[in-house]
Length: 209
Image (cartoon, rainbow, N blue to C red; front, side, top):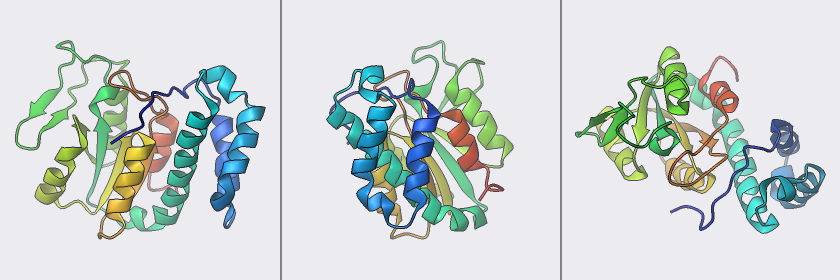
């Protein structure tokens, strides 16, 4: 399940999200983040930049801030895990047709990036993750996650997905022994979805706590 609307927050400066993150780091502030988000959205002219109704923007951004808070809470435990995986969305690939040379694993129902396009976000994210010792999977959908987890027994995962889907995943994992970090998409949809590569790098690098 995802939002019933499309959003694109890629044109918003990263300082907007950093400001919200700074506030959310303070004890208890994330519980009142709605008013802070509205104030920041006005200052950064979010509605004008995105063309998205303010109520939709607030819904997405509030979810992003909540994910940031949960990442912070879980960060120390996640850094201790050694058997870790990254789940990337296949819709962030540069190409969604046969120009993409990703190999499909029929057993796990996932794609394996073969680094065919230098300007592909999934390619870059895969390279970063593998260099840091992660197993990286490109998912056609969330239903294959349970199959992967049952087969591989990972104790730490990084999920890149729509904020609402990350929230659902974190809710499911909180009652398990698996530690997690979430990277929310800045642009959703069925193709050409986007996430911030710098944010991704920071989260997968467990030397940065």
